[in-house]
Length: 192
Image (cartoon, rainbow, N blue to C red; front, side, top):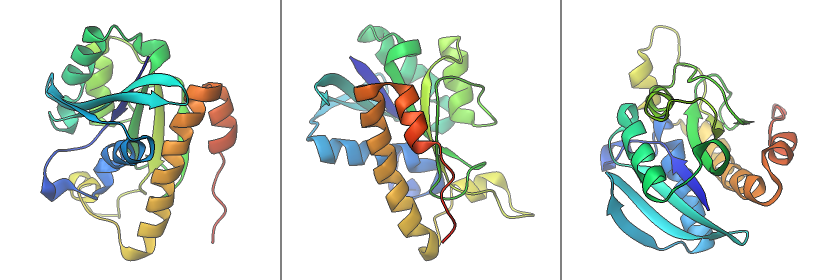
């Protein structure tokens, strides 16, 4: 069984913001695979279903981004998930161009507070992640204003494609392993 975690912030005011790429990708996976919502437990919304013949739990922590680790730790423990080999975290990344994907098998938080809290609560940096580029903050901007902001119309098409690609990348990780997914998705997108 895989645990697929989408990072984001709950509430209408955060919908479609840069920081909610994980939530948006979970929504796409739920829609694509008809995963029913199982309810709210451990301060997370979650559902159980199958992707590529594998049982999965998809979850969106409701604790707000900076406190994502508690719900992730608790749901992983409850369902006895080996987070180092069977958990995929989907997140936004300001170090990648809008729409670009990067898959990693492990690594530091890289300044991402949601990842930082998960690493602290799990006591390991070893878990897979799918990073979705949202672009660097403009010079002089506050980082929070940038990641909690919405995309300009010109970026929206790229982001919608990236969400679809991130959902595909999760499917590829489950079907063929992280190396195959990295080979396919860790390419720099050609400029239009």
